[in-house]
Length: 497
Image (cartoon, rainbow, N blue to C red):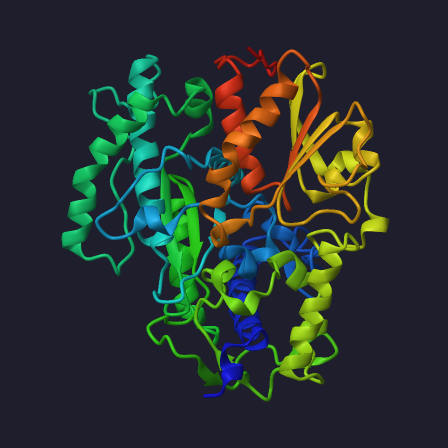
């Protein structure tokens, strides 16, 4: 094995290889649905993904939305994603932890799943692990989440006197609240997890984490249940009998359950050393210039903890899939591939590309890069780095807090480039796992900045990070907790102290 085995190129080839498994599942699912449709319904049956050229996404899977489980899952699911990503942490599902997170209730994902179930479909969620056949997010976190929410439905139904749909005429509960786990969870461990579920339900009820209880009961019309697919179950050889069995289980369950299909696309993660792989069992050509016939070093779950890995070099799933033909071009060397990645990430830092790899000068208005909380007179907005681009940003904001490593050229806290009645602060904090404590160190400074400008001054504040998904979210949540009164109503207005 050479040093190249752990290079960006070979890791990204591993990710591409595994992403084809997701496409393979979509092919099987599409073909099964089409066999159940009439000839007229089958017209115009396939289309190309609008996200990535040359990637397959079928027309008739609108009711089977594909969701990435952040952050690893985004690398494999990005070309096929048709709904917002979610975040079920593997750490919540580590053995003997078995947590139901009150910080990550994932109600947006619940909305997606229930919407699919109402249309006779199911939600597909993608994640991977470097060391395990199924990530702990799929083995324990999601099954526990499903069971706790199913039991909350019954508890809240009784509280609001809306339990008629869950209880039959004899007073028996006809709503499935059992725990379902994958086959690689032992019976003994299954029972251990099952015993802690009532405590997790009590904790959720006492916390009031379900703020809109009426909405929760209205949207969840069928109990949640997981199903699992991995290369061990459905392989690249297109085993139709195997797929028929899997689809049959899901198809039969759809009428009774809100189904969550968990796809772990990596092959067995037991081997931690990259293995040389000939690629005859997947598409050998990516676009026009990338040929996999020569083979590559395969790493299961190559995207797992990518933020801590040296190979990622600042690359994101969106950047990779936007430029994957350039990065994986078989006519260039590993070092030249690294240089391509460097040039792409440099253009992001210099403001030439946005985080999706699109040319900044061709992008939509700045208003598409931020969202506002509260009313116009006193509001906080959260956005990506594009929202903080000068001078356009000052048309919409009076105070800007930049919580990221990236700063536009000439736009520095140390330079007098801000008008007298405008305010700017840069807190240089890395996103993701690379910097877990620096934000905590500077949070007090961030809160003072927000407090000064959101109080009597009532200035329009923008808090932005690189993508508006990580550190900036934490700062906004802290500010809301400190400076806003909680109103459990449908009103979107904010009252500041």
